[in-house]
Length: 189
Image 1: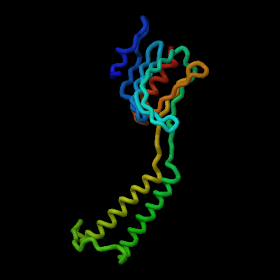
Image 2: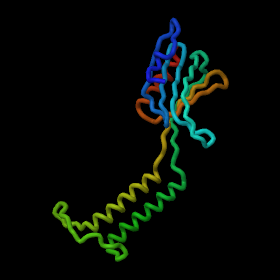
Image 3: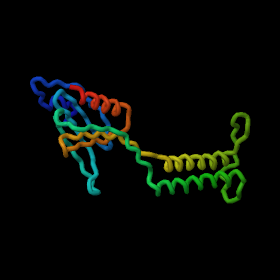
Image 4: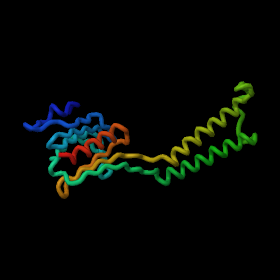
């Protein structure tokens, strides 16, 4: 299916397009939403995981506006798993221990170079820059592992009593604005 979704759907006689959001970014998917006077048309193309299987789906879901009973959109924050937090904590301790060993001129660390560089009028050994740089990189990586959260924008449309449809999008400003506009327009006649 190509990018021009409006040319591939048939509009009724008195049906016109309110919004056409073609640049929505989903989680591992491409998504496009078209809101008309009578329908909400959602196109998805991407990779989904179902029962531990990787599935590629393409499809168009058309929902009549008069059958929509409930709409909700929210941002879901999923924090990192406790195992990755423990690995990050261990890496953080290792970075601090490396920096302390270098600060105390420990003999456990091998000498990389005897060269010195002048930085803002002070002599700094390349050996110090090497070990402190490695410690800083490990510390930043560990802090990212500890405090990282996954953010997902979820848009749910419930049509009738049982039919529901959910889209998982990346949390970006364009996606949030598009979902906000669609939700506000759906409740207007």
